[in-house]
Image 1 (spheres, rainbow, N blue to C red):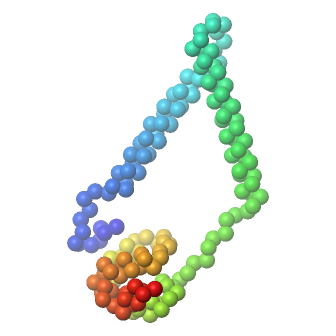
Image 2 (cartoon, rainbow, N blue to C red; image 1 turned 90 degrees about the vertical axis):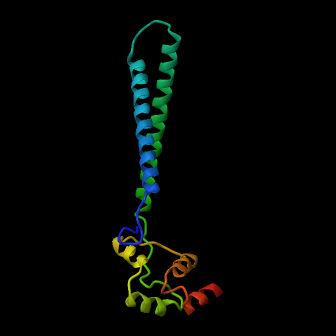
Length: 158
Protein backbone atom coordinates (compact mmCIF):
# COMPACT_ATOMS: atom_id res chain seq x y z
CA UNK A 1 0.00 0.00 0.00
CA UNK A 2 2.72 2.45 0.95
CA UNK A 3 5.42 0.84 -1.16
CA UNK A 4 5.98 3.99 -3.21
CA UNK A 5 6.46 6.18 -0.14
CA UNK A 6 10.03 6.56 1.06
CA UNK A 7 8.90 7.26 4.65
CA UNK A 8 7.19 3.90 5.06
CA UNK A 9 8.79 0.49 5.16
CA UNK A 10 6.78 -2.73 5.00
CA UNK A 11 7.66 -4.95 7.96
CA UNK A 12 5.05 -7.64 7.56
CA UNK A 13 1.79 -8.07 5.75
CA UNK A 14 -0.51 -9.63 8.33
CA UNK A 15 -3.48 -9.82 5.97
CA UNK A 16 -1.54 -11.87 3.45
CA UNK A 17 -0.13 -14.10 6.19
CA UNK A 18 -3.63 -14.80 7.54
CA UNK A 19 -4.95 -15.44 4.05
CA UNK A 20 -2.08 -17.87 3.40
CA UNK A 21 -2.77 -19.72 6.67
CA UNK A 22 -6.48 -19.93 5.88
CA UNK A 23 -5.72 -21.33 2.43
CA UNK A 24 -3.35 -23.85 4.02
CA UNK A 25 -6.08 -24.94 6.45
CA UNK A 26 -8.57 -25.27 3.60
CA UNK A 27 -6.17 -27.41 1.57
CA UNK A 28 -5.42 -29.60 4.59
CA UNK A 29 -9.12 -30.02 5.35
CA UNK A 30 -9.83 -30.83 1.71
CA UNK A 31 -7.12 -33.54 1.69
CA UNK A 32 -8.47 -35.00 4.93
CA UNK A 33 -12.03 -35.03 3.57
CA UNK A 34 -10.89 -36.68 0.33
CA UNK A 35 -8.99 -39.38 2.25
CA UNK A 36 -12.04 -40.05 4.41
CA UNK A 37 -14.24 -40.13 1.32
CA UNK A 38 -11.93 -42.65 -0.35
CA UNK A 39 -12.11 -44.90 2.72
CA UNK A 40 -15.89 -44.68 2.71
CA UNK A 41 -16.10 -45.40 -1.02
CA UNK A 42 -13.92 -48.48 -0.58
CA UNK A 43 -16.23 -49.60 2.22
CA UNK A 44 -19.27 -49.28 -0.05
CA UNK A 45 -17.61 -51.23 -2.87
CA UNK A 46 -16.43 -54.06 -0.66
CA UNK A 47 -18.66 -57.13 -0.85
CA UNK A 48 -17.41 -58.84 2.28
CA UNK A 49 -20.08 -60.84 4.10
CA UNK A 50 -18.46 -60.73 7.52
CA UNK A 51 -20.40 -58.99 10.25
CA UNK A 52 -17.65 -56.62 11.25
CA UNK A 53 -19.41 -53.78 13.15
CA UNK A 54 -16.85 -51.21 12.05
CA UNK A 55 -17.30 -52.21 8.41
CA UNK A 56 -21.08 -51.88 8.75
CA UNK A 57 -20.67 -48.46 10.38
CA UNK A 58 -18.41 -47.33 7.53
CA UNK A 59 -20.95 -48.48 4.96
CA UNK A 60 -23.70 -46.62 6.79
CA UNK A 61 -21.64 -43.42 6.92
CA UNK A 62 -20.81 -43.76 3.23
CA UNK A 63 -24.47 -44.06 2.34
CA UNK A 64 -25.26 -40.98 4.43
CA UNK A 65 -22.46 -39.10 2.70
CA UNK A 66 -23.79 -40.08 -0.72
CA UNK A 67 -27.26 -38.87 0.28
CA UNK A 68 -25.83 -35.54 1.46
CA UNK A 69 -23.88 -35.10 -1.78
CA UNK A 70 -27.00 -35.85 -3.79
CA UNK A 71 -29.00 -33.29 -1.78
CA UNK A 72 -26.27 -30.68 -2.23
CA UNK A 73 -26.23 -31.27 -5.99
CA UNK A 74 -30.01 -30.91 -6.15
CA UNK A 75 -29.89 -27.67 -4.15
CA UNK A 76 -27.06 -26.35 -6.34
CA UNK A 77 -29.02 -27.18 -9.49
CA UNK A 78 -32.15 -25.53 -8.10
CA UNK A 79 -30.16 -22.40 -7.17
CA UNK A 80 -28.58 -22.23 -10.60
CA UNK A 81 -31.97 -22.62 -12.26
CA UNK A 82 -33.40 -19.84 -10.08
CA UNK A 83 -30.45 -17.54 -10.88
CA UNK A 84 -30.88 -18.19 -14.60
CA UNK A 85 -34.60 -17.46 -14.33
CA UNK A 86 -33.97 -14.17 -12.52
CA UNK A 87 -31.33 -12.98 -14.97
CA UNK A 88 -28.01 -11.22 -14.55
CA UNK A 89 -27.34 -8.90 -11.64
CA UNK A 90 -27.71 -5.21 -12.31
CA UNK A 91 -24.64 -3.12 -11.63
CA UNK A 92 -25.02 0.06 -9.62
CA UNK A 93 -24.41 3.30 -11.44
CA UNK A 94 -20.93 4.74 -10.97
CA UNK A 95 -20.59 8.17 -9.49
CA UNK A 96 -17.67 9.97 -11.10
CA UNK A 97 -17.58 12.93 -8.73
CA UNK A 98 -15.71 12.37 -5.43
CA UNK A 99 -18.56 13.80 -3.37
CA UNK A 100 -21.96 15.16 -4.21
CA UNK A 101 -21.71 17.75 -1.42
CA UNK A 102 -19.97 21.13 -1.35
CA UNK A 103 -16.53 19.54 -1.01
CA UNK A 104 -16.20 19.03 -4.78
CA UNK A 105 -14.37 22.27 -5.52
CA UNK A 106 -11.86 21.84 -2.69
CA UNK A 107 -11.09 18.25 -3.60
CA UNK A 108 -10.74 19.21 -7.27
CA UNK A 109 -8.26 22.00 -6.52
CA UNK A 110 -6.39 19.83 -4.05
CA UNK A 111 -6.19 16.90 -6.45
CA UNK A 112 -4.62 18.99 -9.17
CA UNK A 113 -2.17 20.83 -6.89
CA UNK A 114 -0.10 17.82 -5.81
CA UNK A 115 -0.43 14.07 -5.35
CA UNK A 116 -1.02 12.52 -1.94
CA UNK A 117 -0.32 9.02 -0.74
CA UNK A 118 -4.04 8.34 -1.15
CA UNK A 119 -3.90 9.38 -4.82
CA UNK A 120 -0.85 7.19 -5.47
CA UNK A 121 -2.63 4.18 -3.97
CA UNK A 122 -5.68 4.96 -6.07
CA UNK A 123 -3.58 5.00 -9.23
CA UNK A 124 -2.08 1.62 -8.37
CA UNK A 125 -5.54 0.11 -8.04
CA UNK A 126 -8.35 0.96 -10.42
CA UNK A 127 -10.91 -0.75 -8.20
CA UNK A 128 -13.86 1.40 -7.12
CA UNK A 129 -14.21 1.73 -3.35
CA UNK A 130 -17.22 3.22 -1.62
CA UNK A 131 -16.45 5.46 1.31
CA UNK A 132 -18.54 7.50 3.69
CA UNK A 133 -18.00 10.92 5.22
CA UNK A 134 -16.21 9.49 8.24
CA UNK A 135 -13.58 7.89 5.98
CA UNK A 136 -13.09 11.15 4.11
CA UNK A 137 -12.67 13.05 7.38
CA UNK A 138 -10.07 10.51 8.52
CA UNK A 139 -8.04 10.96 5.32
CA UNK A 140 -8.34 14.74 5.50
CA UNK A 141 -7.16 14.76 9.13
CA UNK A 142 -4.03 12.81 8.26
CA UNK A 143 -3.01 14.68 5.10
CA UNK A 144 -0.80 17.72 5.65
CA UNK A 145 -2.47 19.80 2.97
CA UNK A 146 -5.99 19.15 4.20
CA UNK A 147 -5.73 19.00 7.97
CA UNK A 148 -6.49 22.73 8.46
CA UNK A 149 -8.89 23.47 5.62
CA UNK A 150 -12.33 25.00 5.87
CA UNK A 151 -13.85 21.96 4.20
CA UNK A 152 -12.58 19.71 7.02
CA UNK A 153 -14.08 21.98 9.66
CA UNK A 154 -17.31 22.16 7.64
CA UNK A 155 -17.41 18.36 7.47
CA UNK A 156 -17.21 18.22 11.29
CA UNK A 157 -20.49 20.14 11.41
CA UNK A 158 -22.30 17.65 9.18
